[in-house]
Image 1 (cartoon, rainbow, N blue to C red):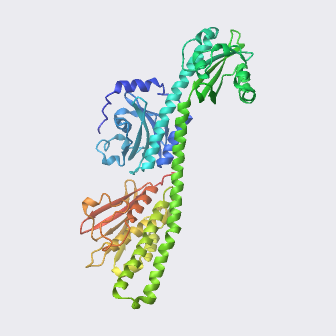
Image 2: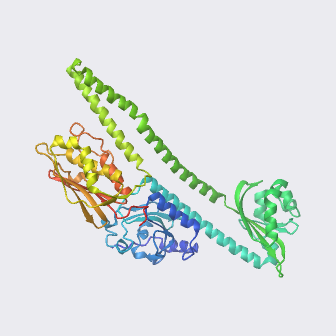
Image 3: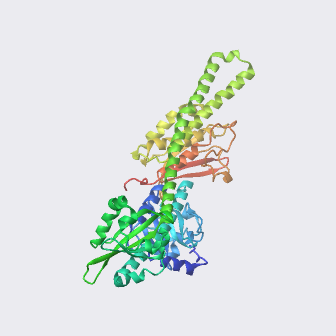
Amino acid sequence: MHSAPLPDTEAQRLAKLHSYGVLDTLPQTAFNDIVALASSICGTPVALISLIDRDRQWFKAKTGIDVEQTGRDIAFCAHAILQPQQVMVVEDARQDERFRDNPLLEGELGLRFYAGAPIVTDDGHALGTVCVIDTQPRQLSPAAEESLRILSRLVVNLLEHEKERHAEEARQREEARRARDVLMAMAVSTLDLIAYIDRDERYQAVNQTWLTYWGCDESKVIGMHVRDRVGPAVYENEIAPLIRRALSGELVRYQHLVRFHARGPRFMEISLMPDTDASGTVRGLILRSHDIHLQHEREQELKEALSALEQRTLEQQRFIQVLSHDLREPVNAVRNFSTLLTTDHLQELSAPAQRYLGFVTKGGERMSRMLDDLTDLLQLDGYTPKVVDMDTRALVSQVMEELHEAIEQSGALITTSPLDTLRADPALLRIVLFNYIGNALKFRHQDRPPQIHIETVPVDDGMELSVTDHGLGIPEDQQAGIFDMFRRLHTRQRFDGAGLGLSLCRRIAQLHGGRVTLHSTLGRGSRFGIVLPPTVPGEPA
């Protein structure tokens, strides 16, 4: 196990972290919502807001895990903060030299997959991460990676807001203790707008920042009623009820868009703090306005980013509609009319024309299969598997019936071991078996019938369903990308296909929280498998 080295600016980073006063604080809804959103977007059982302290990582918010903290020496996030501008993704921790013997890979957590977006302050210090964890190896889509970045920026905004809020409350408590000196204290320069309003709701004092925002001098303000400053309509409908609550002794806080004469419209966080005398009687109000316009704009940017994600989902659905209907119609026309020409007029055509017609027919069939595969692949995004305890032998029989013609033509010998019950979505698992067996029939030695064996085998992380053949096999240097979209090892002249089938199998495995496997030797055959966990993500354990 390799513990992460310390960042070059570790002392400054720790000072920045401690300045927020967030360590060991109670759970807060806003932070909990962020980890819930991260878990939902990335489809992982565990999500965390992890902050890296001197000797530990502490979780400000968490879902799917009960521990409050771990040692820094075993923390994945301690590695992630070393590259503040990147999302660190570990697809399979067992295959990573830094983590393969990490104790987090064992026990109840059983960590396999990790992705963490550093929480980076404006001055470049990475305090920790928004991270997601899974017990199964997997990959992270670019959209999910970008979402983690957005959520990590939101955490920084929340930390800054909490820091400002605590500072604001501390300032207000100090002012309450020094109520008798409030008019003098207001003369001190501050970024906040401060005014003192008496029980008659008239301004008795304002600070320089207040005057700067409103673009006026004291002579135009002191003694003026609040109603005359804000206007009768705004006063009666919005301000008067709040002032009455504050004059009754309640600390009132609210956010409001204020249209300043000198600064224009600004979102402000406004506090009306009662000023009481020794007997507890309210003698006036301290009005403090804090400019949160920049923070509000950042929150709006986040909302717009999330809206853009939703829009891309809708566009994808429309694309699926085009694939399923608009594109399929001309393809079907090509196939139908080429079939009619072949059936009714083939003998009337010259030899070159017959050859060209064959190209058209095969091209239409290939395009139809590609549309089927693309539609299936795209429709899996956001799909929740309908998991049941399924009869594996019955499913194998169904797929063999669908491939009956290809099996007969090739003279294939297909055998099975006793097949265990699998917990999966039957419709999706049928697609996997169809592709695995279909490939075994296709990529065979031409001088002998294919031999195919189907079995189920228990493995560490679930149950594996595999299809083994004695066919052409796959070169070792091409095995790593065999499940990528449109990946082909042979020309269409030799073997037909769009290169989408195995991508579809991998996506189906991911939807089940599982994985695909491959063992192959060039010239001797291949063994393709899908590992299904005991419990599918989103399913009650």
